Length: 424
Image 1 (cartoon, rainbow, N blue to C red):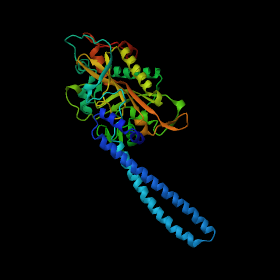
Image 2: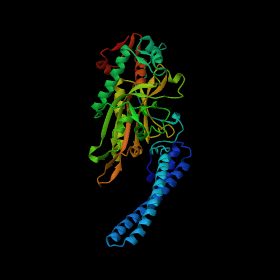
Image 3: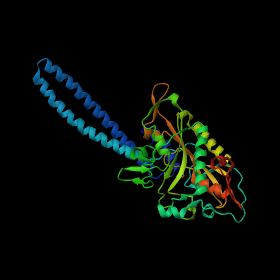
Image 4: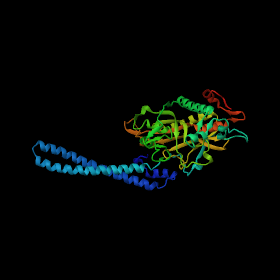
């Protein structure tokens, strides 16, 4: 959530940033925010003045009673009663203005970083890095959903029977390869200084709102209505909310956390060949990395996250590229996002496998996540997160890019985790 003070002081910069996103009605909403904030602040001043006058009169009344001037005291008591009624009305108005302001602020996405270019869709994203050799598999190469059926390692039809489309069942060596990837990703993250945690897979409304899933992604998350809990779309939500409401010290930075969770996404409206097999699921596994950083260091930390993900893909020997997302493709809460895409040789297309993002103070403002700076003043922290990595498309890439006439080779770095070197 943007800070009102920033909107007041840098309105033109905010509007220019939102223009990169092609955010409609930005100026109208910003003007409504400034009006609501002005009303809120004016009402707060009036309420404070009224309360101060009431307190002053209360002291005078006490002194009058002590000196035997009950008649004068009773006259002032009538006035304090009137002030109390005025205070009540002002308090109600203040609550209304504050609620209106909050509701308007929730509609505004984050302002993109200065390096983010304007754009309308993924076609405007910048390819800033690529690495790895795309293998030549020949004409007989199969997409992963056919390989899964051939070697009986992932059963999409069985998942459909149990739950519905988008809920695959991993079997035999497919399940072991999936588990191997999870353990490998976690070990790499721990080795890089991230603390492993296990977190709940359902969160309350406060948690989903604090990290920006609500109200922006309402309808895209599975909701357990009886208990008013949401199945998590990513481990970012519960991990980041571990620090909700905290007041930190500068010496605590950086905070680096990793965790594995299943993720649940309704993906409403997703149809077609581009979402076939593991390309898009309602339930999938992901290992996440989250950082809480001092504002001065957050972009250096983001670069470090990008390098960390690079190293994992290098060890897996998978061809990949990195995109800097344009304004129109950057997520609601992010200031800057780098997407990693893996080349699927059998599908002849790039598949997103990771995002690394800096949210600056946008989430921290919702989280009320602050730290005391060297001057002893309270300041918002910066939050970052990245997929390290999302499993379905990594697994799809391994199956497709490592296929041979004799079976699917296991990447060398995973063999100690799987206990086998080929799926045949």
